[in-house]
Image (tube, rainbow, N blue to C red; front, side, top):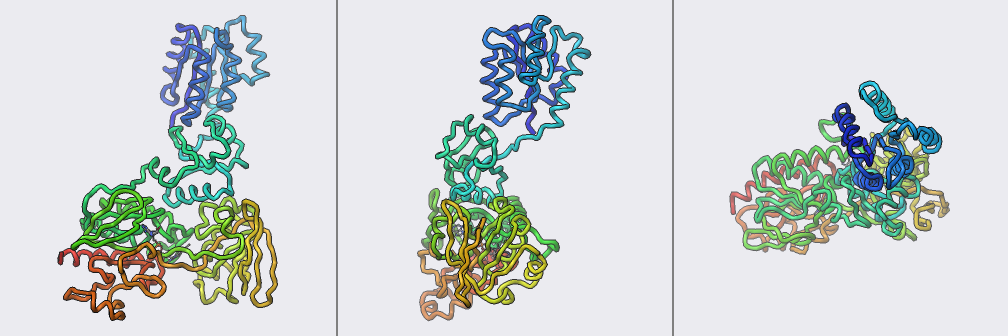
Length: 553
Ligand SMILES: Cc1cc2nc3c(=O)[nH]c(=O)nc-3n(C[C@H](O)[C@H](O)[C@H](O)COP(=O)(O)OP(=O)(O)OC[C@H]3O[C@@H](n4cnc5c(N)ncnc54)[C@H](O)[C@@H]3O)c2cc1C
């Protein structure tokens, strides 16, 4: 934690040095001591400290100064650091002003000059005031702060990005948190420049892109080497597992992630069926562990950065990226997973990010406190979100087309939902319309059996309605099934064309695509099991196959 400041102001250099020396002798271990000769300069310094997210515990100011009286200075300083203790350094003749200040500006103490011996006249008073300050002081949040409007889609995007990348931040809603007006004024931020991201060193970005934030927080978007043994595209469970094994096997391994490591699993509030974690673990926790493990073994990560094309040249694969120059590699693992299908109903485009969210509930959960929230979908991800949100929302309604969850959700989740009082199921129904002016206000639910429609007040709508493979970006002729999932291994023989294009005198390896040296793992692969454990297993397996391929080239 940063040390708080004690600020001393006196225009008399000798007095200033003397009190600075005495205060420093006793308190320098726990406080930084700043001594200034002019009140005007001191005020500038105080503003600067505020900008840098520093804290002031105590002001000790002389009363008689040419540029500003001590009481005037303390009054101004109080507006910037309202909780700091205030001591006026006075001559006997100024006692009246000091007593008046106790009432008007809640002066904490007036100290008569001279204060010697300090052990008797100075230290007990200061120690007592600092103790008092420590007891009531709540340390400022020291990390990144995001200031914006709750219902702004850009605010949601930034929060989602920081959450996904496991970067702690404090969210400040301008309409709720009073402290934001002070920050906006100090940093000269207009309301049309929100959301703003304030960093620990006092600098800020207004309406930033994800890339701008990534650069500031030290995420990398350009590779360090010319050539890699394996490049893994997508850092979900499959990619992370491949990365850990690639690293441990000593391969030059690069992992590239479009949005945030963890993939779909990273957005899960609790994964209960992953081997070795009997009480479950959150997706964020799993991601943090896996990333640490991969980086410990020297794996490089570029994020956020999307691979937008793959080409082959001789035995090399050349990857084009959304940021930075092309990358050359011997092998590729495509583990780009799946993305949510979008819900096509009236009003939804305008309100996406402003009360309507696809997938992840974690970044917006606090805005659901005490409200009715709706979840569309009957799969495990919808079930997990319902359980998680039930701890915050007044009521959670799960809207499903079918008559029950039995065929789409795991039994353990159905049991948990049945035991949770504030979760209700709306069966045989669909969302017909979402309504709101700048933010979601209500949703209209239509019962498919009766045709009846009902509009309900809604704080948020979370959509989990199945997924499509993230393969649109691949221009190379990698065989996919009719839904766009990547074909691998023996499944490739189903195609007559494959037999014509496969020129090696061996069969493709189990997770190899129709292009030698390009593998695929996890949910993006045709026939995948759509589970964390299976994605991890496939990711690990690809590295064994990468090794075999590398011995051939
Ligand atoms: C909310 C939720 C809860 C779940 N709970 C469970 C559970 O409890 N148990 C369980 O077993 N399974 C669960 N699942 C399923 C499980 O999360 C998935 O099966 C698993 O995440 C698949 O991993 P993957 O690595 O194949 O793909 P994904 O997790 O989809 O990861 C793919 C990654 O690739 C990135 N990417 C995509 N395109 C590009 C590109 N062009 N360039 C770079 N990067 C790219 C994406 O941004 C993403 O991070 C859950 C899923 C969800 C959504």
